[in-house]
Amino acid sequence: MGFPWKRSPALIVLEDGTVFKGRAFAGSGKALGEVVFNTGMAGYQEILTDPSYKGQMVVMTYPLTGNYGINAEDMESSEIQVEAFIIKEYQDFPSNWRSEKTLSEFLEEHGKIGIEAVDTRAITRHIRLAGAMRGIIATEVEDTPEVRKRLLEEVLEFPGLVGIDMVKRVTCKEPYLWVNNRPNPGIRHWLRDHPGFRIAAFDFGIKYNILRNLERQGCQVLVFPAETTAEEILSYDPDGIFLSNGPGDPAAVTYAIKTTRALLGSRPMFGICLGHQLMGLALGGRTFKLKFGHRGVNQPVKDLTTGKIEITSQNHGFCVDPDSLSHLPVKFTHINLNDETLEGLEHREIPAFSVQYHPEASPGPHDATYLFERFIGAIKHHRRRRTI
Image 1 (tube, rainbow, N blue to C red):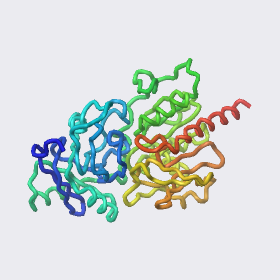
Image 2 (spheres, rainbow, N blue to C red):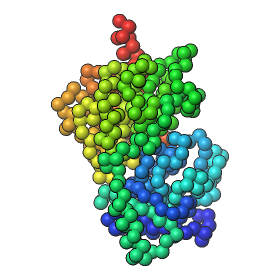
Image 3 (cartoon, rainbow, N blue to C red):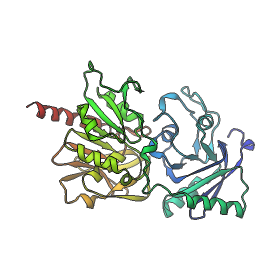
Image 4 (cartoon, rainbow, N blue to C red):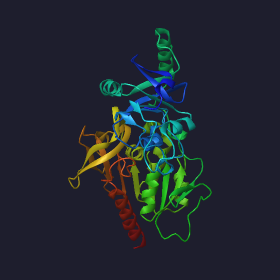
């Protein structure tokens, strides 16, 4: 438990007036965001650095956090993306040969608040019943009616994530090449002597492990800012186009919808998470906000083509409405077995497919990594057709 007597009291106030108490183990001050929960038992570093969590404060349902520390290899972006971190019990003495620093040190370095001694089961149950909602965390404050009222007023002034373009807050500023398992900002062109397929990847908040998986498939990946136009992408003559994960409301990212629509059919296209939602919107569909989202590493998904069940890693609060695509040449490929929401689609006439979940995991199971191989297969087939 470290030294709890040195930690300041903290309050969580939700937009419906519900209050939870805890104490800070990292950071101080205030943080605003949408309060969501993740059911994973491990992978807190990957969760903290996943850009899809931008604008959100994450509650971990597993009670003990911090016991294996932090290391440089498990980053999913260059910094912590969550607005604050909420846990039941913090372990300040990690035991892991890979550990380089504590979770508290990591949060402090990035100026983020972490609070513990919170009834995370009660928060999770409340969100499951009432839905994900806006919230505020404040440290070093007294729990008085006046303080609660003032914090609630601040929460209600926070706009939330619906209708807000969060992608611009996480996307890269310039194109870069992913080489040797790391980003290379100084390289903005293809390597001529590279034998692999060339993948143009949109950075809507891309996770590093997606890029690692594409590189393992022998590809060279050039990552582009979210607002890159279709004309610029095609000027690089890629073999395939990838639409990444990312945060927030997909309907608010209007420029990406327009660009995706312009690129459909030009090259094989693969989308993950937000990329799946953008593809659905580009095809003419609609999206809607889930009550509390899917965030964890144990979501069961059925492949409707094979009948197989995959246990998947997920992190999303929006979903594609299948009814809005029913009149289009679109095949539904995967469904979520918990709530039967759409988890995958494929166009019947052009080489384009997408999934709502994260086949690259980090954290989570590897049941769905075959989708990267499917993407490469589509590229090979498309190339053969172009050369005939």
